Image 1: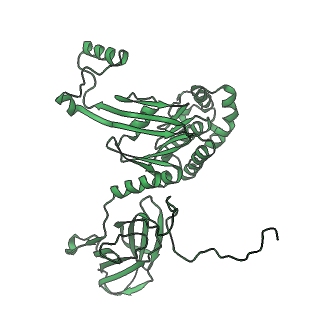
Image 2: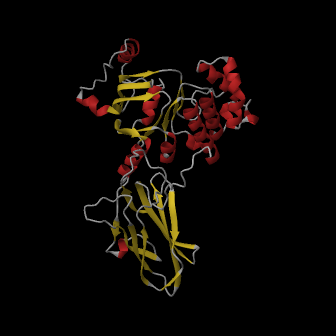
Image 3: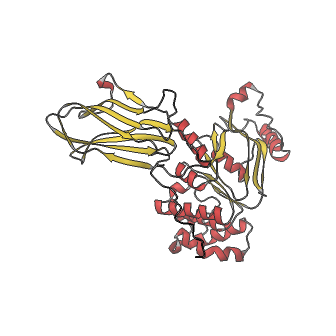
Length: 426
């Protein structure tokens, strides 16, 4: 039977815009006594006042959800959606305006570079201090000490005050401490972006190890959709302080990305002076044509797609032109980079098209980019995210309802064959 590690009920957080304080010492003291000591509503900031309503910013509104023990919850949303505010409330850094948060076990948070570190203490001292704050004994911290230092890669600077660390060293040590000191609940905000790519890979591997092998609960906020889908069991999408969707990580990420991008199957420019381009290349048309069986058929993983482009070559004389077509998922993965052969082209209108067969791409959201080059080496014009589209899922006779893994889903021959009837013992 699963155990609830974090329970959030009707959580709301309201901030006041504008000046700090009431403008009166007597009222400031009264406000402090009412809110901090008596734990009651701010008497000078009432929600039913029209003036105060204009000054109110609801960072979170009526948030309720549960996280099971050993579960990894990925939280996505635009900047200002309330993700960091939610993590700070769960970490007991910020007090909510309304609602309750219940947690089971020790919580360790890494919400920004160097959270919980004392700048004047050395790296060694901060490791020990962090362990004590988590309620660990000196022997427990010592047992993990060498592993933490090796993971962070700061052996030479271990006895240097952390205020002299670079931002990268800071976050490496902070993450190493947070991940290795074995809290029951680990809360990570978008801090891994500070490290280099090699360290980010180590961090993601450690998160996977911590969640899957030790059964610890993790709340993970990231703008890397690939990291969310790879590491998280569940996803939660916050939008303007409210929960937009909760579900599997892949389903939440896909819906979030599709909503953030405008599905665009065609762009055409009748006025060449307003079309994208430069003095060498000017676009006329880019279009994606789905080959549907009927006009009402969905665009799903079985649907062939034809990419078409028309552009004006403005270069005088005969020029060797080629084009590279790039297909990306909205989580940042490049599906393919398909170049055309070199072609000798005169000044005028140039056309090209490329068909992606059905039963090749997996369901999800995608976009096209392209580059037009001269002599396969000189960039003449680039266009990022010129077209975007979404493919729906189709399973047919399959009874598997989980997310189909991978970017591509090719339908090449693959089947089981009965090779014989002899017994296993023979």
